[in-house]
Length: 283
Image (cartoon, rainbow, N blue to C red; front, side, top):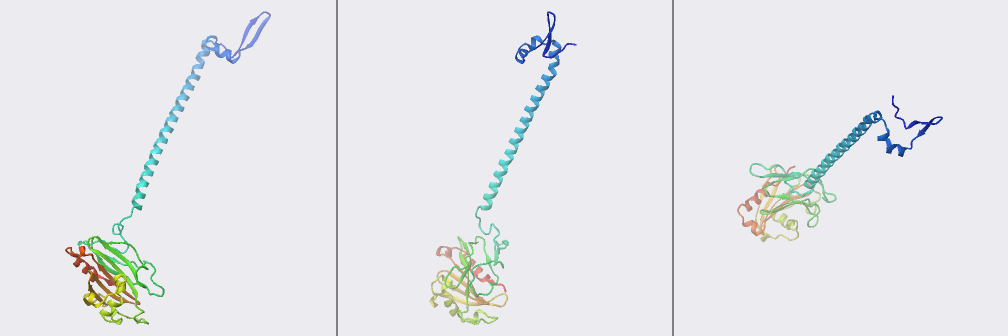
């Protein structure tokens, strides 16, 4: 058998000498000096080295492709989350968001707003609870926010609705103790006084500061609500209609107003009357 070690025995006079080649010399002369069998035995090692190198390259390629796939997935996820966040944060009309208290429209496009029981605001120290009220809301009318604490004197604008083509409305809450104190348990608007007295007394609340005189009243009437409560209704100059009632220690008033251009449009007056006449304090 041929030996493939780096050490070899070389003949010398008087015996043999063991010589050990240096690695550099051995590397230079390996192909020529090594026996063929040694070169043959080295092939499996070389082939194994190539195979391991190929395997490493394959693993690196797979890892790189996996990293690219993960990166693409993360990018798509971030993009989707950005679109969703933009949709959520974009301001939308109250009706589009399903505003609290606003019902779905019926076949005629008419919704009903009912004041949510949990709605809060600066409703005045010493005042009683605000009872739910409701009114009809035609298509195109949108709530424009809560305005508790706004307005004239001690009154409150509880909410506002607007329509570009139909006008605007406000629901006003006003204390009545300046007219009657203590307040009777079953007090009604009639206990405060006549229609003329009431509209003049609440004129600043209705107009936002200006008084209402007798010549500003085009017509007025008394209407009985669904639960028997009396309502005072008014047609005023300057394209304004009003309905008012009393429950507890508050007067509840809905005021609707249109511009001159809106008032001239077909159906606008009828729409405003319909909203006013639907106003109802539910208790």
